[in-house]
Image 1 (cartoon, helix red, strand yellow):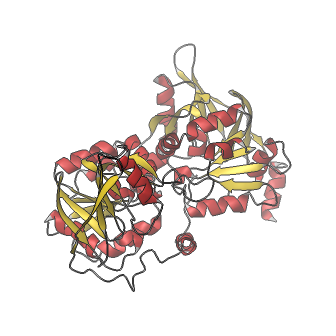
Image 2 (image 1 turned 90 degrees about the vertical axis):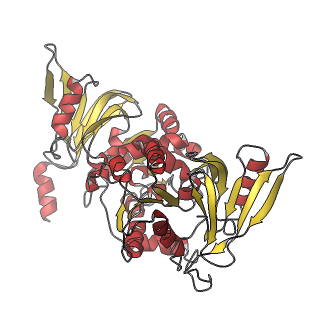
Image 3 (image 1 turned 90 degrees about the horizontal axis):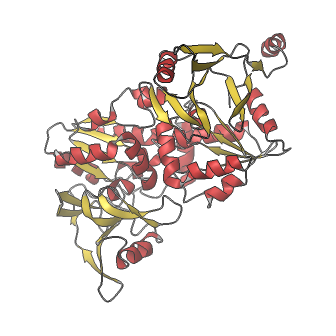
Length: 232
Length: 258
């Protein structure tokens, strides 16, 4: 749902492997902000997919049985915002369990920012939670994750410290970059803007924290082509 | 409050004013928490519109925006004279509060004399339990339990809630308590009910308790009309359709979440 750039949205729609996938948006981490829901319906119009959203703050309207609805989707897109509030709200409605079921049933799960952190065993969260802190996610992926890795000051240092302190090895992901897992294995690293970065961080054999820059595949035609397109 | 106040655009400011009066401070510090509706900007604006005109130090605590606001939520709550909690999803609000340790902070604030106020979910949360629409249909939900009884809200406005409240009390799922209309409010000093008040004539409060033989015993509670109370005729309370509210929120501006 990047402004003026549909590459990542196109990519996740294609991952569903269905011509007109059923796509459900969960804006929980934003407190179900209306403008975010509107942005989703603009980015995922009915001409390309069957879009829907679940508002956990207004359950008296909308989808009745949330679990059944989530399990019937091809793609679930989780929006950004506060990870702590997201996880608390999900647990209160059993959405954590429903998402695990959906994942096991082969539904493609994706999201940005808090919508990325939530899938991992551990997350190093910052902006929306105040100072960087370690938060336990849903644990579908047995790794640690942080986002805005190259953009937000303090993120990288906090992430390296967390890995050094015994958090599972993991991934620091920069803006416009994305990790694609199949099961719990990293399958692809992609980006919607040339030059986006992603870093694998682990404790090496000598016991020190080491960073390894991952090769990131640009989803556009070519860097030059993309610049030409923007210029046009 | 069973409903009413600035978040519901009640024309009478009597209930909001009462919250300040109860602090017995000349310039009280009052903090608004809109957690139960996901911290919409519109409610924050309305809060400042109403309380900005009165002698007080208004602030808001948004648990979805701790990064932006750079506030330590617990420290902030513990320095307030009054805490005003908005309505919405009680289940979400309590779950989010627990994640942030706000539930414990509320108890500490209460014990140290802070006035705890709110409407709808923000009123039921102080009791052992209430009837919430958080799951779609009305159901009994546990609260923080600062007060022993139970509370149900929007008595006249939401017809589906009262039957569920009645049967929850009859079956013992919820303890005895009160069902309040929009504009009706109960004031507790410690755990003792001190006043039953209303911001407009005709607002009702009903005490509901379990009857031994089965069912419930119910009695009307007489409410004292607050200074500044107004008839509901010209009020916008509950009049605005949800489509209009949604458009209003949309026009309030954009915010990036990712």
